[in-house]
Length: 315
Image 1: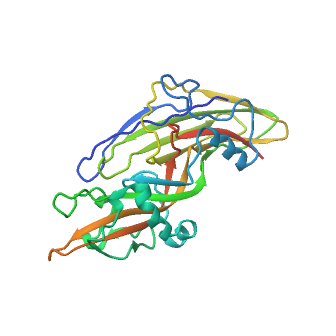
Image 2: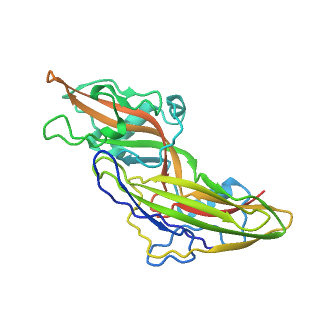
Image 3: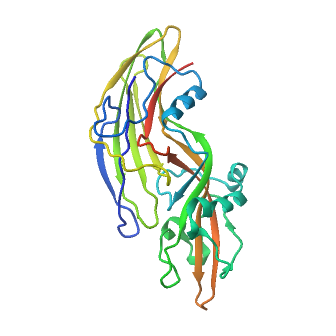
């Protein structure tokens, strides 16, 4: 099997307070990918993986994941829509450790100068607790990259730091087919090119994929939307020039339940959206603080331009 997928290169600019998206459509899963670096691919031949560890080991060959990741800018794409609680984050990544990592991972702009009055770290209780009381309850995304309150100061720095929580999460699965039999599937996708603020938001991408297994047994269609954020170490300059849509057919071994999974070529990282607030009030009193907001973010594997890969599974 030689199924290949590629993500778009994403660039953009701010338009008002929101981000405008320019959409392009193309097919996902080509046998050839002209003019681009060779991406990770699904399992060759008629190999059916039995365990999650076998899948991890295979995908790791072409797209290894970092144990820790960092994003400069607000993670517009890829954040978990479910509420993330501080207690869950603390178990995997205590905020004391995150505070130590922030300047190292995100840069010197996150340092807290001793010459400015420093408040205790503002550690929020959940991902939904992202309003800033010092600035009329603005949400974190709106504040990211805003001009400094200090004349001539740098825009407000923000980002994300986290540790690996889930490797190569499953995005799609076909219906199981009992062997001995023939199994066919077709994949098709819409590639979204999403704009972003270069000053305050991280670059992110979106892939809307559709998996179709024609005929019976196992016939059906399922779709999913895959939203990625790119880390500082992820190469995002690879561009696709040609994708060829293809239906793949395989033989399911005798007495085996076989199916296909679409796996995200990345990991879910649990940690904190973080920003440093340097604030001068109406009385000209200046103070600063670091804010940490619990979050879980899907981050594409470093150096990989491939958003998804398809692997065959068996019971």
